[in-house]
Length: 130
Ligand code: HEM
Image (cartoon, rainbow, N blue to C red; front, side):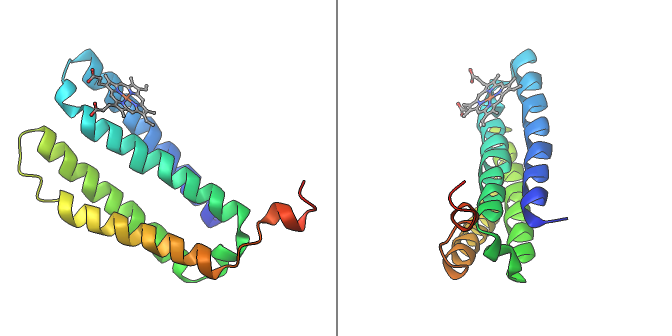
């Protein structure tokens, strides 16, 4: 599967999880989990779907062997960070939050690096701007 579709598919998995989690915490009035719910949706759905659309628009990025490593690094970081947030919301000390945050930042830096290295001409420009 192409990396752009993989990113967007992973985003939908997160979104369904995040929404079901939102419904659950709303119904059960466990609003202390609002922060981990928000991070699941934002780090899990919004950012990865944007990454997928960036990959789609700048296809030079997916030529790099680092593209799948970047995906794995970012997604692992999001899982670890959201688990840490959940722990914090649950009254724990959030041991997983710092390593998760580091992985997410590293994954994002690598994404930015792939973008810079790929050249800046988007696919729409090749197709005459259509
Ligand atoms: C079925 C869909 C969703 C449901 C049922 C839902 C439910 C909830 C509930 C019950 C809260 C807590 C409100 C409170 O503290 O009074 C909340 C907070 C929040 N949700 Fe959702 N949500 C949904 C989708 C989303 C999506 C898609 C996003 C982002 C892309 C999102 C972002 C947020 C944010 C930023 C907060 C505030 C977090 C905070 O105060 O720490 N939600 N949501």
